[in-house]
Length: 119
Image 1: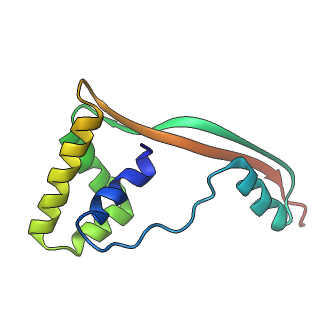
Image 2 (image 1 turned 30 degrees about the vertical axis):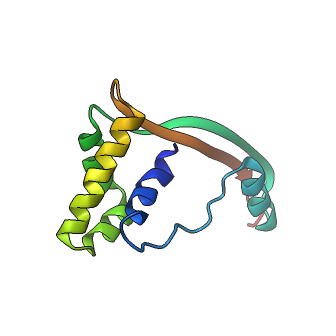
Image 3 (image 1 turned 90 degrees about the horizontal axis):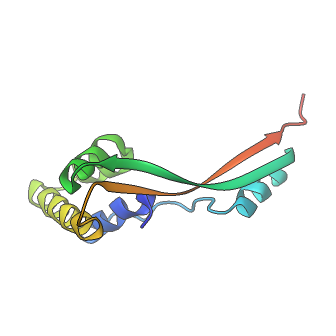
């Protein structure tokens, strides 16, 4: 499961947090947006990347909360009991996904290069 969606999915199981805005998820989408903005010589590529790794599920979750702004903001507005339930759910979920070792979540990133013809 991609790093960029798992934390939000876990939080939304416990609290009414809005889904993230649409992301540009394919090279074609990124290319279209760049072309529509007037860029030329567009090159796009998908690459697999590990976004975050930790030795244990609890270490992973604590790091996500610390570095992922939207997750921390969403959690900060919730009562302590709800935050604890979310953390327990996250640790359990990550433990099920990675029962034998470190937690390593990543996903696909789209990398792009283009020329801006404007002066």
